[in-house]
Structures are given as structure tokens and as C-alpha cells.
Image (cartoon, rainbow, N blue to C red; front, top):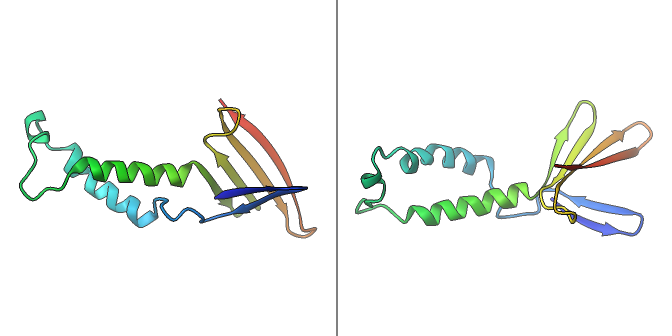
Amino acid sequence: MTLIPQEGGTIVNGNTKPNALTRSEAESMWANSGAFLHRLTVKKFFTPEADEANPWAYVDTQVSKIRDLLTDHIIAIPNPERALLVALYAPNGKARASFFDFDLVNKRASVKTTSIR
């Protein structure tokens, strides 16, 4: 998500980071991780196969995608009508979580924000 501060509030936009890890990419990464993590011996781990691409480029790409996914993100909780906004790098240097509770009948929302230690 991205947060856009404005006078009187903040605009929250979800799905705004095109590099963020997708579910299918996470599943693929999980399936591929065995090729990097379970090569049996240290010698075999550091001995590239002839047709194998640089595994560190793949790891760097996945770390970047995970960072984009989690740095600022929103989790929708449908019942009760709530959203959790999480910022891993808040201005105070700590992670921050904001709970948005929605009153759909009266079309209002309340917010409670807390720093995560």
C-alpha cells in the first residue's frame, strides 16, 4: 500500500507496488528454495552446475519483492469489518500498526495506532 497524507486525513491505496511478491511467486519461490537450500554438501552448494544460473541474483530479486510486499501493507479482515495497516519502517524507527474499524451502517471509521517494539 501507499499512504498519501492530506489535510484532514490520509488516502490509503492498496496494490500499488508492482514489484511486490505475488502469491504465485511466493509458491514458486517455496518450490524452488529446495534447489538452493538442500544441496547436501558445502562443496556441492558452492559448485555451480553447468546450466545453473547465478542463484544469488534470484535470491536478491526475491528479497526485494518481499521487502516491497511487507514494508507498508494492508490486511483486510472481513468480519468484523476491519483493516490492519502495517508499516515496518515508521518515522520513529519502529514498526507501526494501525487498526481501522469500519461502521458500514453509519459510514464512519475509527483508527487506533500503536508502535510495535
